[in-house]
Length: 295
Image (tube, rainbow, N blue to C red; front, side, top):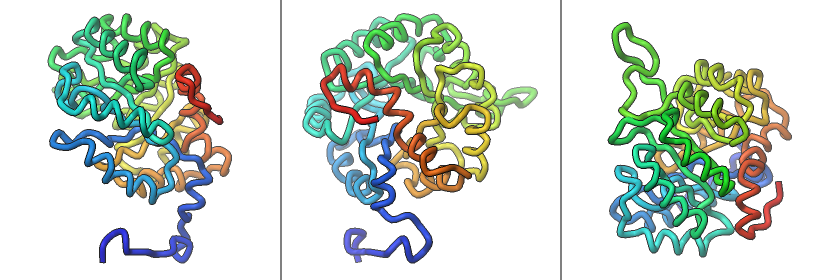
């Protein structure tokens, strides 16, 4: 029996149905739909089966242009990827990775993929060759241009334990940002919305670090699923500062859904996290690009 032939009724198991997920108007702010080096277009089309099955309204792909290892180097599939983002613009959007080690080149890429292209934002990856985190002054021209373009800003953050003495963040990859780096950047640009990705890898620390900075939202995708983590984030940050990401296909949509469904939230608050909060952040650039967007 193939996955397409297999059918169960989620309601029989006390689970939400696909129709219920559709009603949540879910926007996946963390979609790795194009990250297969061999054939990212084929991967995108294969992933869409699961996107549709899980009732996701829109996916935001975090690798539009370049490659994961070298975001500033044009990739052979860039033209096809751009075409898909343009043709499938009613259900998928692109975010283009930048490298703060090369601010001028990053800004040029933003001009090409955001101002003159189909993308809606930028992504800071989990490290870079020059070991430049998002708090470094190199980022100032990148953030200023992002603000001018109304681009969304997603920042991969993590806190790996290491060093002597062993402390959070001391074993991070070179250039891999922490929530502390996000806080420092947010302090310099208090009016620019940005997203602290993966809840910092350690949500108990990540939430507390970004708490004073109202322009920073938290995203849990890819971090370990701990019961109570979302409740804690809502208590400390407020429900309006949390966005949802599925991290597919390397994470389970069911796991990422479970983080929100486990929390003691009203339906209205779940709708905010599942999509409305990100739509509010992204609304200016969607409207700028001529998309009708219902918050």
